[in-house]
Image 1 (cartoon, rainbow, N blue to C red):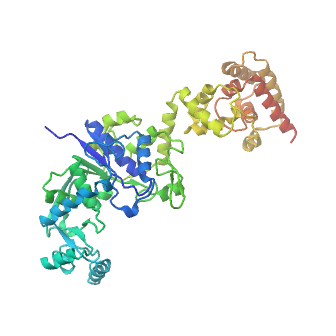
Image 2: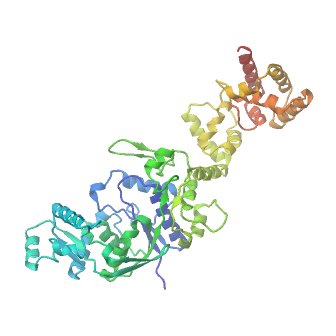
Image 3: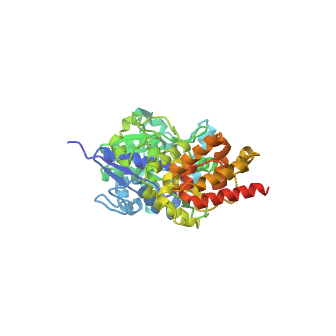
Length: 507
């Protein structure tokens, strides 16, 4: 009987959650759901010096907004808790001691100055990337190079130390990655990483392995940046005598232009967020924009993220979270980095907005109107959003239709300059007369009357409609003028045409 699938997302609370982190959480969640497994959230806060107040809460709120809900977390609990590494501090020492006893780790007493001296010495000898490893460890102050008595004495005196892993010499470490296939790394390229620090906290490498084992994690799905650490983690599983989980290292999300990983700087430069929610830096007060506050729907954000590295193998692009859960497989995750496309993300949002009912959009639009202090004056908001949503990417874009609630204060100069001709005043006067004759002022009736007017006067749309539009809305483009006129009513339409006519006559 195969084990139940259990995956985890394990961010560090060092700031806001980057969209790359959200994608990692999403792929873990989708994989768990696709395999009837469990998705766990664990907070990895072993490095207390980098802890940022509010970051944990941000992570929790961001995942909740996205609909990526764990079954176990620091806030939910679960049988494998605690789910915050600082709360698990007492359990790691025993595992470090186990490695010491088995000869797979050792005490190191080197000071920062001595470590720097070693690196400088190695560089002078022509070593491009100096490491604390099987070669250099014999020249340093540690329990490999020192006598047992010397080590015991230093420990008794309370001399600061770290515990380092003892990487075997001249071995090939093989790793089967679910996305990249076999990865082979020679042990000469791995240094003796610190597993346990002088402050009594484990490093990521030890805590990560121990927690994954104790929490029965079956698949480790994480970013490509952790691939260089994977051989060390495989060794640690071997040293402990544990079965290792399956590994899958996800491709990077790349900047839209040029090469390299997408950063906050790229978002600032190109005008899009890189965080799911707005974030205010507790130290500097700097505010970074978020997808939620920019008006994106979580469904659109998630849909766009899912396609950054994965494809369903079909032409289908719009997926609900439930549909993604059914369709997702690691086999369809690519190795190459995926360039972020801000316009495509907007397109996703546009599709989700168009799919909303007018009723739900009215609720959202009403809040925006309140924020802008716009009185809807009894205008049918269902008709308003129905008219405006085909041109909108965000609900806030529907504010283009503020002319449905307020008279235009200015007229689009480009349209006036191009379309106002010598006969335009007379045409507009005649149009007002025709519109005033319509008894049932519906969109269909206005359109019929307008077309009949053009036929009678032998006029083209271009001679009448642009001026009609700019006097009523102030803009050069927009939805159907017949629908706009029907919404604001006959009296208001005629008043605006007369006001525009007077303004042009007064020039």
